[in-house]
View 1 (cartoon, helix red, strand yellow):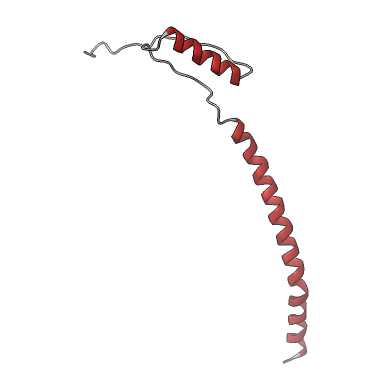
View 2 (cartoon, rainbow, N blue to C red; view 1 turned 135 degrees about the vertical axis):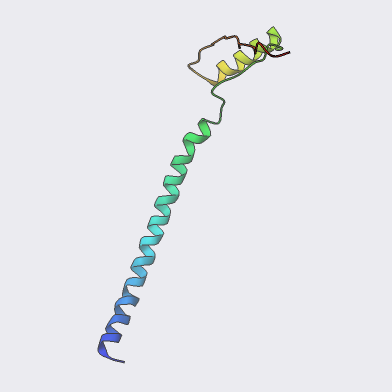
Length: 89
């Protein structure tokens, strides 16, 4: 073994703990970022819109609107009529 090989081996053994330390810090950083990215998704699991059919009763419509209102601070109600196909039987 030449001096060059021994020196290369010592440098590698010396840098190995530094690499392990840096990878551990990077792993903790990425775990923290992953948690902070997940939090907004948990909030957005609530539905952003509600659709009711023409077969819904008045009580069911009111109950749905009240439930939606209690979960969302700012909301609006849009009532529209769907166009039926003229060729539908």
